[in-house]
Image (cartoon, rainbow, N blue to C red):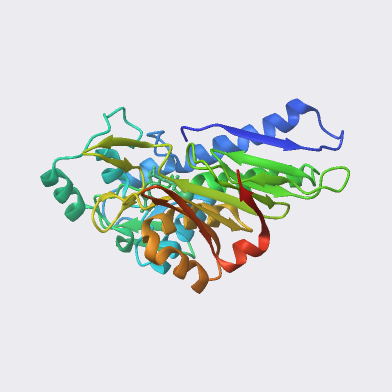
Length: 309
Ligand code: AMP
Ligand code: MG
C-alpha cells in the first residue's frame, strides 16, 4: 500500500513474538493481494481489467470494502468515489512513477468522460460477485488502510490480545486498557509547522481515528498546492481551504473513508454533513494567516482539546 504499519500490544505469553508478527503479516499480505492497486495481479487489478458487464467473483474482504465504498459514495453524493484511480494516476499520485504535474485539460476531460464512475458498478450479494460498465480504475487507497487496521485488530483479538494500538499509514485503532488502567491516548498531528495548534488528545480504546490531509502527498505549481485528494466532479485536487480532516469511528474502515469524503465535501459542507450523519469529525481549515480548528459535537465530546502551544 506504499506505507508502513505498527502494532503495540500487551500480549499473553501464549504465543511467541514471531507468531504474532507472522499472523499480522499474513493478514496484511492478504489485504494487499486482494485490494492493492500497487500490485498489478491483485484481485482488484483483475477486476479492473475484467470485460465490461461480466460478473466476477470477489474475495470476501474486497467485496466488503467495495460494498462499503459504494455506500459512502452514495451517501456523500459522489464526493467519495473509488473509481477515480486513473485520474489520480494522471496527476501523478498513483502507483506508477509518473511525475506529479497538472495534466493536460484535454487528457483530463477525456478521462473524466470515459471513466466508469461508482454508479457503473453493480454487486451481487448472493454470489459475492461484482461487474462494471467498462473503463474501470478502482482505487481503494482511501479506505483499504482503515480496513487493514480493523483486520489486524481482529487477528490480535483472535490470538487472545485484549489491549492493542494498531496503526497503518497514520490510521489507528485501539482496544482495551493498558496495564495500570490507562486507555490508549493518541494525539492529532498538526498539519505542518503550525504555531498555536492546540493539543488534541483522544482516548482511543474501542475506537479508531483516521486522518486525510493535503500536507503529505502534494506538489506546488501556479502558487498553489495540488494534493492527492481528487474532487470526482472536476477531476482536480480539492481546494486548499481544508488542510486536514480527522474522523473517529468504531470501524477504522469507516473513519478512513469518511475523512477522505469530508475533505472533498469542502469547508462549507463537511461539518454540516458530519453533524447530519452524527460523525465525530475534526476539520482543520487553512486561513491566509494561520488555521482554524472546528469539530462536530460528537468529536468534541470524545476528545481533550488543550490550549494552543
Ligand atoms: P486518504 O489518504 O485516505 O484520504 O486517501 C487518499 C487516496 O484516495 C488518494 O491518494 C487516491 O488514491 C484516493 N482518492 C483520491 N480522491 C478520492 C476520492 N474523492 N474518493 C475516493 N478515493 C480518492
Ligand atoms: Mg481515507
